[in-house]
Image (cartoon, rainbow, N blue to C red; front, top):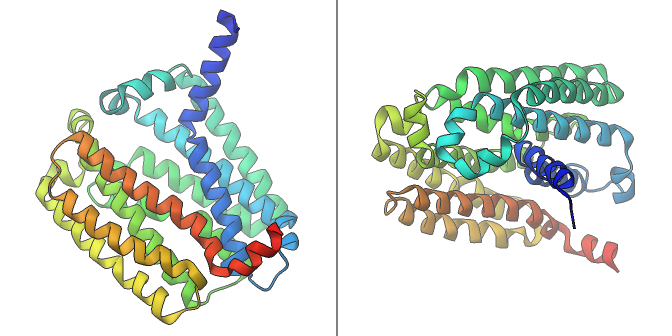
Length: 301
């Protein structure tokens, strides 16, 4: 079995993986490739997309910038997270604040290096993206609604890097983007309800803190209803293959979500709602495969 030193190294590795949200980064990377294959460049051979060095550089720059963003976010939120998520934060604190800061700068540098392989425009894009993440983590996230809006915008920004690369600006792309943006915005607002205790202690001016939980629930309900519009447009106006199953399932789940939202009044309740939204978002990534089932089967067989 592991000795004490090996266990410490293992725990530090798990701590770093937890800080950078490695599972989220992997899902976003997968989503970028699936989006490229099935939505942005459906007529391009799959092998050409997968082995495209420029696309690899852009996706890698995105993944590394996102990981560094999680690090700087953890760096600034360490006291709040100790209140809201004490168990996870104790694991995260195996990695020192100094190491986090060093890793943040190193990862940002590597991200820009990858971007430089694609183009100078990619360097400018990711430099602005990295600055945006820092400015959000340092200043904007403490401001009611603006913090939520900026966070959701930053979450979908890596996909726009791929959109720009392929130069595909069809309306269906933006309808998909609006649908994803609304879900991420709702998730951010549910997280504020979940983390209200730490936000109050650290003087974060989130919507639940400033305007109360009821107002926050009203806004979340309104945004939940809005998700039906892009979902309906995608099902009725565009060719999305069998992905319509996902969107109908989303509409049903959002009705359940809103019902339980108004029944919720504890951290555990909001955590469950948060997990429902995460399940929808992750399911959405894999449901992209349903756009062209024949292509998937051909690749498997």
